[in-house]
Image (cartoon, rainbow, N blue to C red; front, side):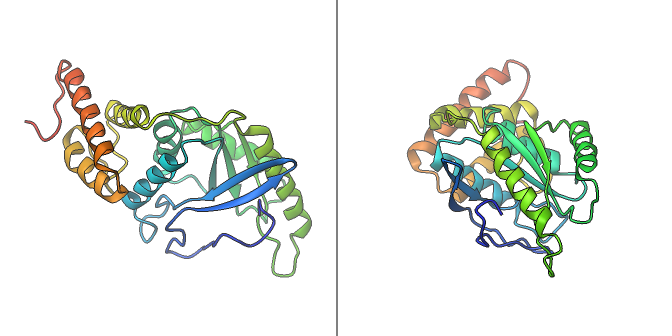
Amino acid sequence: MIIDEKAAKVSNGPAGCTFHHTSYPVSIGTTQFHIYDTVGLNEGDQGRVPHRKAVSQLYALIRSLNRVSLLVYCMRGRIKENSQANWVLFYNVLCAKKVPIIAVETGVEHEEDLDAKRKESMQVLKSYGMVPKDFACIVSLQGRQMEHFERYKSSQFQLRQLILDSYKKEPWSTTTDDWICHIYNTTYTKKLCAFPEVKVEFARKVGGVVDEFIKESGMKEEESGKLKSALLDAEKRFLSRGFKFFGQG
């Protein structure tokens, strides 16, 4: 929809269809963007892209880019239980709250008043602590008989303008070392482990998770060494507060 052609695969079925990130160049006005269609974050109860694999691939993507201007959080239908965790993963953890994030709700073709729907959905997002820089309800389908064509074109213009108005003119970037330290310090502080498929305290699982994360994400030996050093430094700081990790106790 953003690039004005059918490029990215979509699916309404029980199995997710995006297993790897893909880049699509697009010009909006005079500004050139590279938009990445990323792996899904297991929004259903089962059958979607495995959460652990998705996290590894998102990590690898952002690490390889090292310059990010905007996050677009797409949602369809009601807010699900793990939506807030996915938001925290994208915005708080992976991008250190340094990248603006907008939310886009699709699947509203049969809503008569999109402005009222937008206000309703914004309130729901806020109740979950999810506050985007801006939010839009868009008609993303033209319809089998092109019955939604006019609303589709209006939504397309609105979304492209929203991106222009929201993106960070000086892209966020950070050194790999600083970013890795931020990710694991944030994860540890929140006691939120985004990597296993079940919720566990990071303090109990960090050793095995890190080793698996390093392996699955293809982290180089030099970087994995720096990561573990950063975690050991964090351990020293937190042990003074009575915490233990790496399987101690």
